[in-house]
Length: 168
Image 1: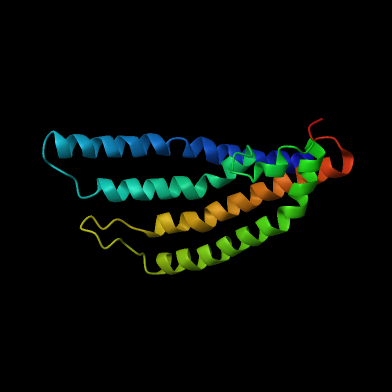
Image 2 (image 1 turned 135 degrees about the vertical axis):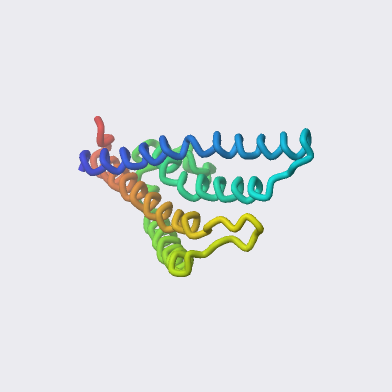
């Protein structure tokens, strides 16, 4: 089980290391637009749309990395008062809701992306970039999130049963 969890964590780690460059790209695009628009009075037709697409991919794909480090927002009213084993038990009990969420996003996201890829959808703007790669990020991000969720579930299950963490 420790090996499976390690592989899942490594996948999330690699995706996070790749995605960490997107905020820099986003910042460069926005700065470029600001300089061209405000200093040279030459706004671009592509910067706004590219920044939205970049942020969308970052947001969608970053979920697994965030879950790996348990950095998502929790309802901390009771959770913070629990022991590590109590937190693991609660996480195991709430996993079916997470699973349902991921399966729905994966299913609907796949249908959404598949239709876009089928017609090689492009934006209706003057720049007209392809939209299908961004839409493919939805099922891919949902799959990575589901995979990390399964890794966390296995880790929590082990802790809930044994009282010890997987790496102890």
